[in-house]
Image (cartoon, rainbow, N blue to C red; front, side, top):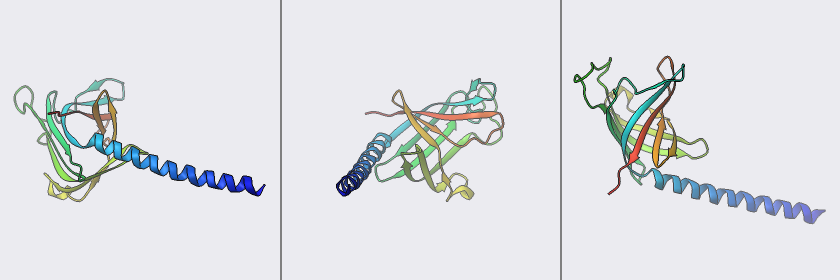
Length: 162
C-alpha cells in the first residue's frame, strides 16, 4: 500500500513538473507568435441582433498597427483612414495610441497592456486587458466592451512579414 501511495505521489510530482514545463513552453511559443509588427485589417462589432459592423470610431477603412517586441514592450496606433472624406467622424477624433509593456496569461488567453504613455495622458498607467486568439494566421484582440448594443468587439490584425 505504501508503495502505491509513494508511486502515486512521485507520479503526481512528475506530472506537476511536466505540466509546469509544458506550460512554460506554451507561454514561450505564444510569446514568439505574438512578437512582431501587426497591421490592422479591420474592426468588427457584433450587435445584439447578430449583425456586424466596423467600429464607427475608426470607420470602414481603419489604419493601425500594434507592435510587440521580444523584450515585452509594445505600441498601438489606430486611426480612421478617411476622416472627413466620406462620413464625419463620430464624437472623439477616431485616434487611439498608447505604448507600454505587455504580458499574457495563456490559460485565460488574456493579454495585459501596461500603459506607460497614452495619447490621453490621464489614461497613462492603466492596464488594458484584451482577450486574444489566433485564427487563420491573424491576431484577434477582444477589448472590453463599452458600447451599448455591442456584444462582441474584435480588432483583427495580420502579421507584417519581410
